[in-house]
Image 1 (cartoon, rainbow, N blue to C red):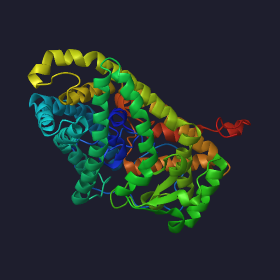
Image 2 (cartoon, rainbow, N blue to C red):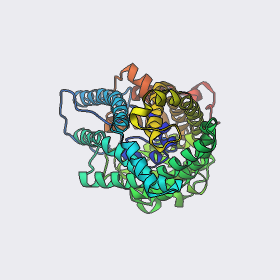
Image 3 (cartoon, rainbow, N blue to C red):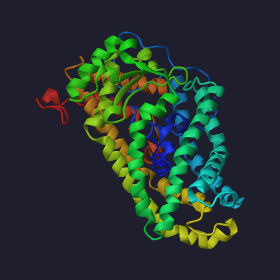
Image 4 (tube, rainbow, N blue to C red):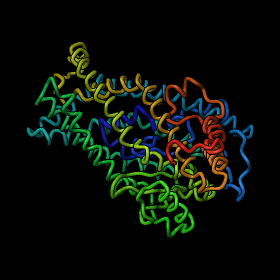
Length: 460
């Protein structure tokens, strides 16, 4: 999960809804990723790889002793990791430039003037202003998304055609505009109501909206981008194995809430995840995973995902990032006045309560969230490591040689998704939301409390 995007998603909740368009897995859906930050990619380094993902796994996977890739794929994985790292830095700077241009060209001020000239009611002004400013920002940032898909296609991670990609982008924009309009209207209503406490009151208002979106995402949003079918119809044997896992984990996810997702028309990635809560909670297994992984490997992936729920990672992550957001909103409150006093007249922004100040909010939020990226990334890696451990414990005794199965799963994940065998420590520190694949393989092979007569920490 991309830390900066999570914070921006909480501020403009539409960013939560379309992980396929943001190049990230949103906070509510903590997927079992290959380890590197899921940032979009920049231009390839010296090579121009065009091969696709590896063939389907054999019925009896090779025994794993450590994470290794053939020389050619090793080089591709290492190059791709460098591309991701560079792009994470470049995209941050580029995003700031886009917001600065919107202010420099006085576009936000022009959109505000148009909105105020059409309507006197504030909500109707938001209906005019919000789509104009959000679409302008997203269109100016569109080259980064296009480049992301291009590089993913070059490296065999994406098989999505450009027509399909642009249609997904369009649907994402529609959803974003709807949610953003509501939140922007609420933000400025709160600012006008309480000029000195708006940062706290807006934070309070945004949290229940986030929970509603989290609940509705698998029911309403995800089906806009992928096709879902009951897993029992697609793979009854796998469904039965997952039922045993769910029972052992003490969770309540009946077979009718286990789904097969048609991901192969867009990606080669291997994944399974648990999403939603209450009546919307469900297990989702990608068809690419069923094609490339064995049933025990899929059960381990599901066990990892189950760990996020059993260990309370979802509320902890949401609470952690929500607390950071509160800090950032307060910092914005303390600094936006100074920014507008210095440059507001040049941008034709009348004050904090002016619609046209929105790009300043987003610019400051981007800066603060980027500076805090190591904190969010470290916390995410911690929860992902715990989920890895839970997956090992919950499958112990359920799956023969469960440690080796887990290691094979990470090997497959790294091979398909081109996880870097030798990641840059600075990259890991700043952006990795998951532990590096080599570390996860090593942990899977060495974590064995049972051989010493002990029990697991989470599953007794």
